[in-house]
Structures are given as structure tokens and as C-alpha cells.
Length: 113
Length: 117
Image (cartoon, rainbow over the protein chains, first blue to last red):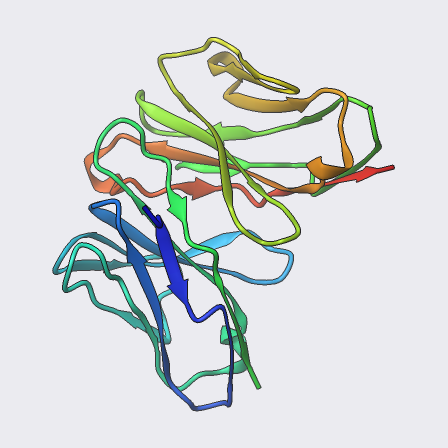
């Protein structure tokens, strides 16, 4: 049981490049989330999904896209990277039910120069 | 509106001191859940505790304890006899039970705790 895995761990992008951050969970969780954490700051929700085929915007969705074709995978796509997207990106998941705590991946540290 | 406030941006204490991290929340719901997470310098987010709104019992786990008071909308976290390994950023979070909440967590800004040897 690996929990939530994210790849890559680190990435440097040039301005205007695109990339996909991968997130996979093996806990059969319905709910998945993408957050960004800027240096010294808290977590901001980018996108979330309540199940395969269903996604919705969070607080800061501009410049990102997501898809959820399976329960396990929730990739985050950055199009036309900008320096403002330099951040640490966390993927999280949780199950439907009373427990509700979110399980986090190890994060992807992205630098856009 | 729902909100989580961690007014202490940074706290610095000497090892073995007790320290309390404050968390105040606002919610429109009568059923809700409160959480504490730890983010050590290595960067991962570690779940510490969950409390639901119907359970106001205080919780103790080793050197950690949590004080949930609905009357003051607070869910404070105390570390007794702090250790250098407790140095981290601690986040408080709220999850409402409303149908449109989608199990989202509303996060506080975090408190950076520095334990000096």
C-alpha cells in the first residue's frame, strides 16, 4: 500500500513550457485534490475531483488543467508555465465517510525560470 | 463564512518548554471536523488528529494534547516538554459536512514552531 505517490519530485521549467504532474493513489479514495504551497505560505486548492470523470475548480485554478479518467489517477497539467507557478505542489486524497482526513503525497517542487 | 485562523505566525521556545498553538474557526455548519497537520522541514504533510463537532473531549497522545472548545470555536494544540524534533509548521484545518463541501479542507495559514536546543 503506497498511499499517494507523486512524480516527479523536482522539476525546472522554462517560461512557456508545459508539463504534467502525476498523482496516483492506491486507497480507492473517491476524492482527490491538488494544492500549491508557495514559500512560507499555507495551502491553496487548485482543483479537486469527487470521482472519476468529475473535476472542479478550487481557489487558484488559472494556468492549470486536470483530468480524472480513473479512480487512481489525477494528473495536473501546467500549460505555458510562468514564474508565478514556482511552488511546491501536493496531491491529496480522502475517502467518502466520517474520517475525512486527507492523505498527502510527498510533493513536487517546481521552479519556473 | 467558513474560516480557520492561526494567529501565531511563528513561535520560538527553548527545548523542554510547553507550547500551545492556537486555532480558531468559523463555520456555518453544526457538524464539522477539525484537523491538525504537521509539516516538518523535510516538507511532507503529516496528519496528527481529527476531531468531530460532537466530541468535545480533550485528547492526549504522548506529549501532544488537544483542547476543543465549541463555546469559543477553538481547537488548540499543546506540546508538553517540547523537543527539537517538534520544530515544524503546524496547520489547523476544518471540514464541513454540507453537501457542497466536497470533503474540502479549509486551512489555516500555519504556525511555524521553532524549538531551540
